[in-house]
Length: 354
Ligand code: EPU
Image 1: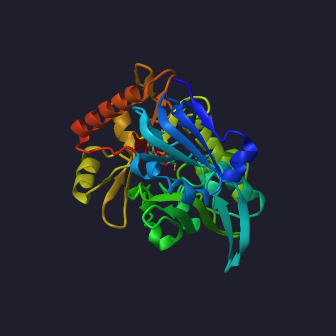
Image 2 (image 1 turned 60 degrees about the vertical axis):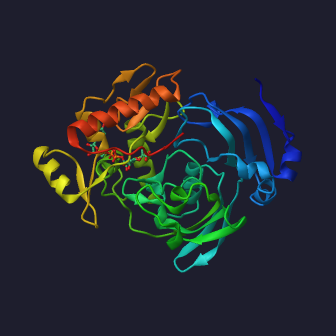
Image 3 (image 1 turned 180 degrees about the vertical axis):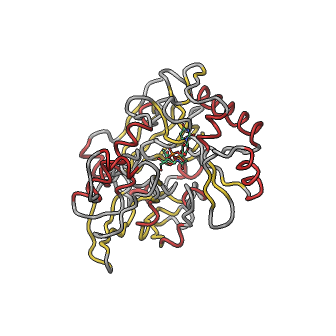
């Protein structure tokens, strides 16, 4: 069956605020690049159009999936309903607030473009989060983090469409319930559609360069006095070496979260395996490295059909070309079983598995 498009004319789409494609392919809309289809795919350019869209009864009676760039989702089957993408663009400085500037960014902007925009304007803070794939709208949902920094630290407010009140709402940072790869937007996936994020960006801040490997990379670059842009450069180089590029090989970054386990199990595992990377959390739980657990079970670089565990990072599952979502999920299940049998730790997928 072929795709059927509505409002495809750019000028009309601008006015209406959205475009609709029926029986749409999602293969180009997920970074694993696995085949899947949606009954309807709606690209929303203007958040205000959500009011009109949710006025249609069908939108409220059909399963709805919100997608950004699809860099944190695995489709194991077609989506039996509507896929909605916020593609609104725009970055706006809204004025000073204390030592920071409020910057409002629409959900459809690419995260990495925004990081470089902020650095070019002399802001700092986002340099450790360089090269993370996905959109700005997706960033708060799983509270993206890397090299010792989480995005929540720089978020002032999140604007979202609330399907309970059928209106645009603004959630203060405290109401976003940010945690490790977690937020209210993830917990109440069916309720909120993130439409814009307000960041509070400083111009001066102590650089976070203590994460393993960052200082070494700066030295290798000959940088004696690091700045936010040079830290970004160092981290981009580490990521390029340690994580497969989703533009070249289908993947969704870390496939599993680093598990948070009870202190007792943590102590036991550390006693049995002294090299296990582990970090004590403020709540007395212990975060352990999922990549280490997976590598210890012999999965790093392992191929299964068209799917594989990356050779450069054991946390990343890759599509070697032509893999189905089910094939990737089968590999994920094999990893979870093996890690659980050996360490009694259940790995939780990081991306949304459809
Ligand atoms: N490790 C292994 N085997 C590997 C890779 C790593 O044993 O194949 C061990 C390393 O020795 C190291 C530890 O695991 O001690 C941590 O490795 P790394 O620094 O690569 O970080 P990570 O915990 O595996 C997390 C994030 C990444 C983020 C990096 C860097 C999660 C689920 N993942 O990975 O985020 O880039 O830290 O900050 O928290 C993502 O979320 O998609 C993502 C890529």
